[in-house]
Image (cartoon, rainbow, N blue to C red):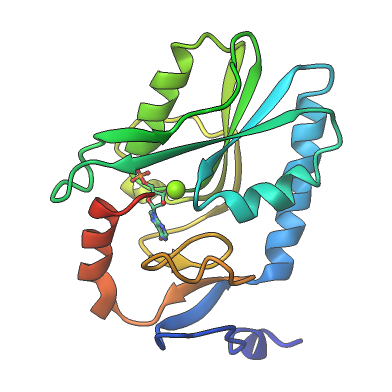
Length: 203
Ligand code: IMP
Ligand code: MG
């Protein structure tokens, strides 16, 4: 299929806001397979626990873990932003903790998108205090241009500039997580909305 046609395929555009497809589903699947192979090689003979950050990373997690050919456990954690008017404050709270201990284990955090990195750096500080053997990050998208916190990202599927994206787990007002591809939003009319949303909703 020609690229120009591919970019016109729109899934369920409930609010007429979907723009271009940035990462089509077949490209995502290929990349996830590659990441799965790298992780399989890197964690051979190690006790691995894969931690999914709710809710955005769920779709990525389910595809990724089916491409890791090792025995390992999965666990879930949920964090949300405190600061209504301070989206970049990095003040976050744990709204759901892990079920299992990570003491002495090799932790792989699975995240949807890393923006300022403040959320993740808070989480890593918290997890480090539980004394795991190691902690690494696997993110679907790295938006490095907005990074504030210093983070070492071991596995990354895609890099992105200043664009707000939805689909494949990523939401706009809690919708569009179910889209198979990743889309940018159509206009900057939603820009203000996004900043408010980021500061007040669960991430
Ligand atoms: P930060 O790295 O602490 O700034 O926050 C990153 C979080 O903000 C991610 O885990 C997402 O939940 C959310 N987020 C940031 N950019 C986007 C986007 O483009 N689409 C959807 N969610 C986003
Ligand atoms: Mg998130």
